[in-house]
Every structure is written in C-alpha cells, then in structure tokens.
Image (cartoon, rainbow, N blue to C red; front, side):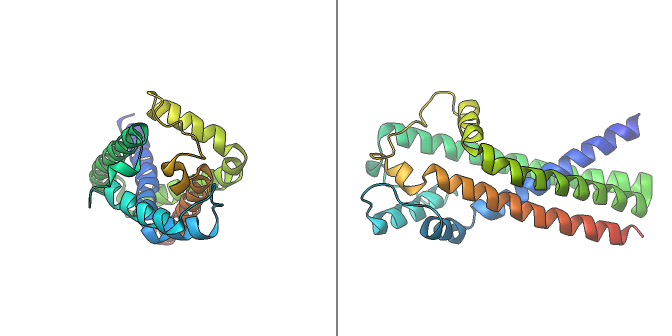
Length: 207
C-alpha cells in the first residue's frame, strides 16, 4: 500500500512537472508571443501596431519580473488584472520548483526501492499516458476553448476584473482571446513532443 502511494505521487508529480516545465518554456519565450501576434491573431479595430508590439514586450518583461510597465496606458481594471496575472505566474513558478524537488526525491526513492528497470517502466508509462491525454486535448481544446477560457478566469479571477470592451481595451488588443487559443495549442503540442520523447527514451532505458 505504501509503495502504491509513492508510485501514484511520483506519477502525478512527474506529469505536472512536465506540463509546467513546457509551459514555462512557452510563456518565457517572447519570440513565440510575437510570432503568434504577428501571424495568427487578427487585429482588433484601428490599431497602432508599433505601440502594441512595444507594450506586448514590456508586458511580458513585467510578468517575468524584469521591468515595470507604464501603467498610464491601462485602465485601473486592466492594471488590477495584470497584477493578478503576475501573482498567479509567481505562484506557478513556486509550485514548479517544489515539483522539481519532489520529483527528484521520489525518483531517488523509487530507484532505490524498485531499481532502474522498474523506474524507467514507470516513467515510460507516465509518458505514454500523458501522450494519449494530450492527443485528446488537442482535439477537445479547439472545440471548447472559449468556454474553458471563461471557466479558467472565473476560477482564478473571481473578482471579475478580466471583462473588458475589446474595442476600447489596450490589453485585449495586445492579447485578444484568439491569442490564448493558439498559445494553449502551442503549449499542448510542445508538451506532446516532450511526452513522446520521455516515453520512448524511458522505454529504451528500461530494457
């Protein structure tokens, strides 16, 4: 029973760690933000593209704790929501660090108890299960994204400071909802590639 609990916690921490590691790689990459905005997201209204590019870069830097933003560009509600997003991302980074430590410790424990072959088999099983789940999500998410997007905001920002007029909001012009659809798909696809690699590598090492 004790060994089964360790196995379940190890599998869950490894799964969450993979997803958050890929998320960090995607959202830390300003080039990916810019490419999405320039190539896949339709602009809203009469937009000063130079201003949007400058504010997008400044906003990403602010969310990564590198600089401050010029708050006069945004309404009080937008500034409040931006601050909430930053706090959520800080919490995500803290959780990710603890997950890395937990996964490493559990890998050592599992390795000592079950040896290399069993450890690699478990990692391969996690990679396979995650691969199947991500394939399903890549089908489901495009069909239900905006419902999921609204649900996410209702759960994490219940104060309601995330509802803006698209025609008047600079924040929505910088990051319209369609941006997050492509961002999510990019995250899921990158996670899929990672999970397939982990699955095949662990399967090879388990032999």
